[in-house]
Image: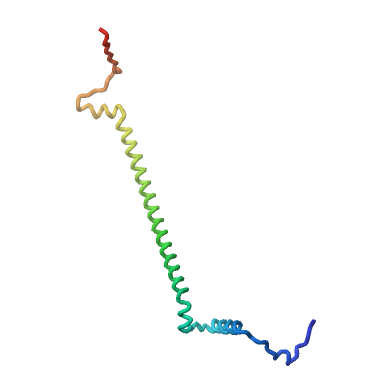
Length: 128
């Protein structure tokens, strides 16, 4: 269970493999903020860096494109509202001008008057 560790046991080192040593060195470099890399490491990381740059460019393009689409949509929405209000005003104007009294006032200068009695139907008989 509980065991007292003697000096001989505590100084005894276990063999450290290469991967553990490399990881330990990497952690020490990060802790010291030593980010220097040699040219061989840079060449190995170049494809990944290019990939990241392409992803960033695609992200920027996508955000700009979506903003443009939103602006165009807002512009078209405002235009539709304006055209709808213009349509309604033109329609109401047409309705008021097509009333019988409005047509009679417009035709009065030409001497055309409104009928007082309803029109009669004229029939023709062809049997003589």
